[in-house]
Image (cartoon, rainbow, N blue to C red; front, side, top):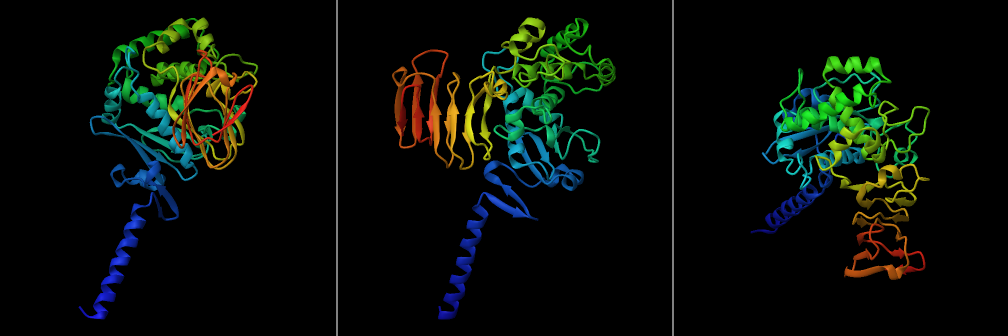
Amino acid sequence: MNIQLIKLFTAILLLSVASCKKDSSPEVVDNNIKYNSTLGIEPVPASLGKQYIKNFNRYTKIKTPNGGTIHIVAQNKISDEQIIRCRSVLNHFLKSYKGSIYGDDKSNIANKMAENGAVLTLLNGKDDGSNPVQVAGQPLYENEIQVEGGDWYINQDYKHRDATYEEILHLVHDYGIGVDGPNSNTGATPEFQKLIRKAQQDALNNKIWGNKAPDWIKELTKENSLSQEYLAAVIDSYYGLWGAWNKSEPGGMWGIYRAKTRDQIETYDPLGADLVNNKFFHPYLTYTARIDSGFKGTFTIAFDEKIAYSHHSRYLKDITLLGSNNTNVIVNSLNNTIKGNRGINALLFKGNKSDYTINKTDNNTYIVTDKITNRDGKNTIIGFEKLKFSDTEMSL
């Protein structure tokens, strides 16, 4: 082989290697849009059709046990973290709850959603009629998608109230659980729907839910969406989304539902309480929450009545800090996995150091277990620099 052919072959080989490195990168840029395969964010697939490709610029999905797909599409003002949070909430609702009556194995729910063509559409702006996009799917708007640690989440002033759980639950209810009556899909758990309907009717008849919005109730009746809206009100209060609401109308969901906390559900709505006690819904949030990279200070997953967002964050179990801000974390009793960011991170405990066992599993991971029950639990700590106890501080 002559010298020129060797040079040409070498150039081709180097170009090929460079191309392979670029293709293996998690981030791909197309038409100034960054798609991160590591985060599962991709271009909208052609298989969804022209209307989705035209109106949405990013896509993610949940694969179902039967090989189907539940689609999530997003418009250009939706952040990647909002997309991930929505997918996490959907995964949470679909995660099997072992030992529960209707959620022990939720593969049938996920499969049915894929069979029924479930699509979650994440839309720019707010739900005020100004967004012209109309495609098949369950809508959820930009201004109603909070991200843990973001300003809307921390402030909990309800100007950007978190509708993520409500709307995604509608998707699971309509396409998976199933709704009795007209204009509905065949669901996977009709017996569970019977209980939901019974609780909804009881709540409406006994002025636990809906009596303060009679025109809305008439609209829901025509749509056959009474049970979906009622269940969403119960679940929002169950996961603490209305705990900080202190306006003139007491209760949850703008005062339409009498209960705004778990304790109040037990007190005011016994059939609603029955729906969330070992039936289908986990008592805590099963996904790993990604704490916004802009967050500064101390993030708590322990309830503190002085901290508005802790009504909701108390039900988080695992969190990952993003970005590089120095951040502290206060833990709860749920046996958490806590991952640090690029800053200096400290985990704060309620007791003295002697109240805990501390084990190092590798150079980056510690397991800290509270000897006192129902306080700080067992925590797997990854990438933290400090542990702070009530009597001392420990560097890792």
